[in-house]
Amino acid sequence: MEHFRSDAIIMRVRDHRESDLIVSFMTRDRGLIRGIAKGARKSRKRFVNCLEPLTLVLMDYHLKGERGLYLLDGCRLVDAFPGIREGFAPLSLASYVLELLEVLFPANVVEPRAFDLAKATLGFISRGADLEKVRVLFEGRAMALGGYAIDLSKCCLCNRKYTGKGGGVFLPQKGKLSCLNCSAPDERQPPLTAQAISGLRAVQGGAWESLRHLDLGPEDLKQIAHALKLHVAYRIGKRLKSTRYL
Image 1 (tube, rainbow, N blue to C red):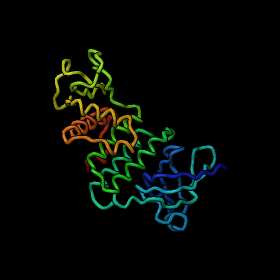
Image 2 (cartoon, helix red, strand yellow):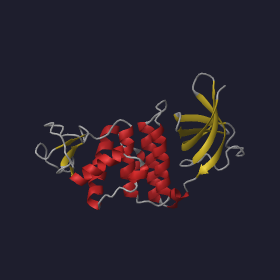
Image 3 (cartoon, rainbow, N blue to C red):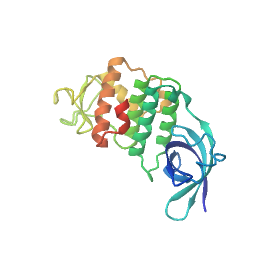
Image 4 (cartoon, rainbow, N blue to C red):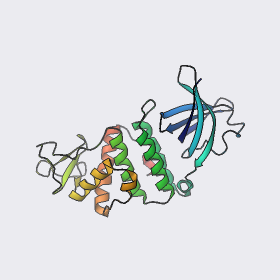
């Protein structure tokens, strides 16, 4: 029987049988995991204030048998991200963060940077950061880590290399950039200024420590947000439940 101890972000919790809980949590070293907390609904000694969604804990657990079933032995609260629960808007965005990560990084897909992104994003939301900017930074980076980065290197229609001068048009159906000579912008194919393209490139490839200082004007932020909204919807192929509250 192999035992593990990992920092974990609690994603979902639901009742199981008379006294157990089924807990979905993300770890840096093993990705998304589902485990059973035996007796957690009756005895809270091993899980005091820990098994709540949108919290960071130190989890002790072990794998039982060969069927991928994890049993939770106990956990300790590391960060409750209290600011997330101070309003509807931060709680909605935090829920969206977890839901999108579940889709991009399901069980058996291990991406340590996704865990780091989740932890940093929840921290920024809790500390009262600009929610619109946080969503843009999170979506761009999460989609890139999930293999869905928007190709900004060239026009996808004429193959002319993008040099950073002038704007372009984002084509959601291709997940790529088009030059203004090949495509006309509209609501479904939004325009991107040169500054917005540069900002989006930084968002997709940067780390939080550098991105939090990224200077994006209101119009550039609006353009990137619209492009990413279309990009996520097209690539994910379904409307995430939490988006109705954003």
